[in-house]
Image 1: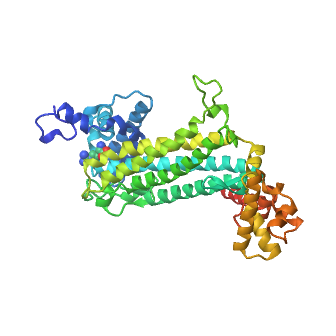
Image 2 (image 1 turned 90 degrees about the vertical axis):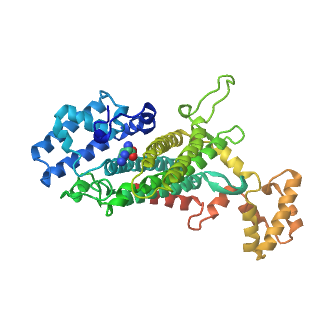
Image 3 (image 1 turned 45 degrees about the horizontal axis):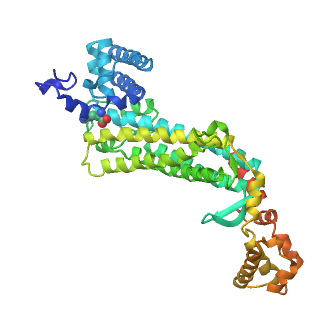
Length: 459
Ligand code: ARG
């Protein structure tokens, strides 16, 4: 038997393989709530504009609520023969309210319907990501506040560079996740236009009110071009792009946590709640959550490349290719939100090892730049010469197997005669970080200002 929604011109139903490649119900059932909200708004508009009778619209709107509660209650038989969520919902509505259900699709197509549903779904995910990022930022602020003046090594090339503070390092991620949050908000504002009423591609001759449905669904306005409304998926691509950048930030931080929690670093201890053990090595406590977050960027970025590739050659307007948008976005959204929650949990629970951080900061000649700066400031050496003198002192200490503060004044003067006792003041790591008071620098007072700024911003 042919399809009850479009089978008029068909003598035979689809081959089983055709049904298998065509049906999207296996995944687009996740759009049920959005689909029903869109249909309820559409029905109300059809009544308000006199396109259907108010009593018919009311029956459809009530019936749609019944369908929704059946789906939410797990009490709904999804049918692959009905292809997708749109036709599954409408077919069930017809069983509940009778032939009047056939009026729901007046002045509408599945093309504007799916574009509307999917925008609503993506918009919800952006709001969830906003909340997830905000929670993560708060967890980082708490870490930063606790250790605003704890000293740790700052790295370039993963080689000891200059001492920084724990708070400063945490606040670097606050800046990154803060930009992610801003990107989420930008994307939301840009995508918040309603495709509903674009119909198949050309608009409709019925006197519909697209502003009414747009407003009912929380959109800022209707999409201005019906061809664009049904064929655009850049809202989904922008979502994936924002998710990719944010997942990349999560992945970098996860990589640091993997390194920091190793026995060789011991910078942090992850909580038992966010670690796993080994079935053979009893001593192991593995940072699996961090590793999985590090890996998730692979599939999220993959989703972006996949959908970009699906879209890149499609002529206007709708093509069935576009049905392939959903699984990529669903998977990316699930994994991004899960990663945000896992990172928030790990950061909230982790304990920084203040002593290990400071000890690591004090090795590797991390205050060599402070020494060179001192030579410039106190002895008026040109920086290049100060750099050279300091290099010689580092080589001397390295040869002796000691750190810069372990050299004697006589050692120092052997390299440059004018060096005085005062030089030892700048060789300690605490002095080093305290001195970096330039705007955005690592000095604890600067870090505390940034913590206060972010705390205000979130409240
Ligand atoms: N399941 C389809 C999708 O996800 C809905 C739109 C179908 N439209 C059509 N003209 N076949 O894209």
